[in-house]
Amino acid sequence: MTQAVSEPTGPGAGSVGPQPTSAGSAPPSAGPGAGSAAWRPGSSARRADRPLPILRVQDLVVRHRTGTGTEITAVDGVSLEVRAGETLGLVGESGCGKSSLANAVLRLIPTAGGSIVFDGEELVGRSSAELRRIRRHLQVVFQDPRGSLDPRMRLGDIVTEALKVHGMNSRRERRSIAAERLTEVGLDPSLAHRRPAQLSGGQQQRVAVARALVTQPRLVVLDEPVSALDVSVQAQVINLLQDMQQAHAVAYLFIAHNLAVVRHLSHRVAVMYLGKIVEQAPAHNLFARPAHPYTKALVASVLPPRPDVRQRLEAARRLAPGEVPSLTAVPPGCRYHTRCPFADVRCRNEEPVLSRIAGDHAGGHRVACHHWERAQAAMPQVRAH
Ligand SMILES: Nc1ncnc2c1ncn2[C@@H]1O[C@H](COP(=O)(O)OP(=O)(O)OP(=O)(O)O)[C@@H](O)[C@H]1O
Ligand code: SF4
Ligand SMILES: [Mg+2]
Image (cartoon, rainbow, N blue to C red; front, top):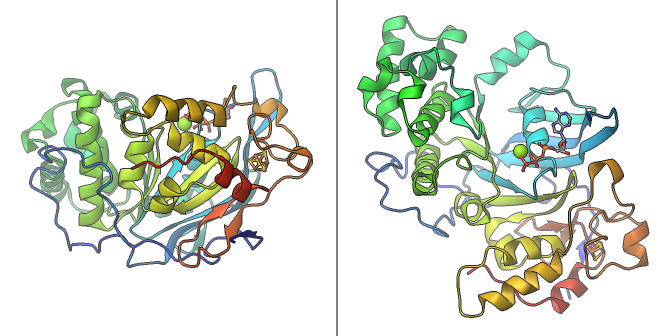
């Protein structure tokens, strides 16, 4: 019988990861994303061949002050890593702290504790000038392209702005790079002279992707990059992101609500609940054998349509009943105990530690639950495929 063993949850501890396709081994298809016939759910069981972490977050704490003056801890001692060339999916219900974590990594908001090591350099405590230099390799695509593209700028200038900021390339070179990059993301290079308002939402997000990749970054934070788009173009942008990763060997920290998309794009997945990581595993393991009751509920809620779907959805509802508690009143012990059908007195008093599941030698599967084995055995089997 397997069990969860306490171990340092620090980055790299015991983690042997999945292997993404090596750079260049699978060139982007013609018209990246655009023509990719269809988004291919579940087809991305890629494996990492470069296991070194590009990002190591250790014991990160982020606090906010609410409108009423109460301080909340949106990120509460989170440790994770993203390896070069891989995608780490980050999921969890609204308000659990995903964007706070992402914005802290990007150094857009202050941290209250912990460490963020990017490409071997500690980011916490860096000056603005140093961060500017580092940001060349650390880029972002936000949810809403309308809000993230300067409406006054021409698209060619938007795409190459980072090159200008970092003093890279002449003006003439930047013009030709803009044309290349627009073409690469499936847009007509003649659009370089247009402004964002003249594009559709999907086209705007393609521009945002081109802008994020123009400096050849090592990591791009994707904070719900398709949530604001029409369903019909979401798959195209997801395929584009996948093509770009293969072409540029870039790593992604990918935040999304849509678990099917996360499963498709991610090599590993971290599940967040009320400011904490409660489970972390290679994507295949997480979706095939979720160990935390909360993860199991999330997975059950995105099962594909099948004759027994109603039963399964009802099972999911039983696993995560009720509302997420407020960060202003975090439950003691395991913070999931107010919704968990397996909660007992230990759960209400003792906070579980994110620990490696013994027996999972190669996978790096970790869970924060006192009774995950009991819960896993007792809960209805949920499989995402
Ligand atoms: N600038 C801020 N000032 C005050 N509170 C904030 C701020 N940003 C986030 N919060 C609060 O911190 C908590 C975490 O928010 P965050 O945006 O990180 O969650 P999220 O997981 O990204 O949610 P969503 O899925 O809805 O985007 C929430 O309670 C939110 O209201
Ligand atoms: S520690 Fe207890 S309350 Fe928390 S998820 Fe596990 S069984 Fe449920
Ligand atoms: Mg968010």
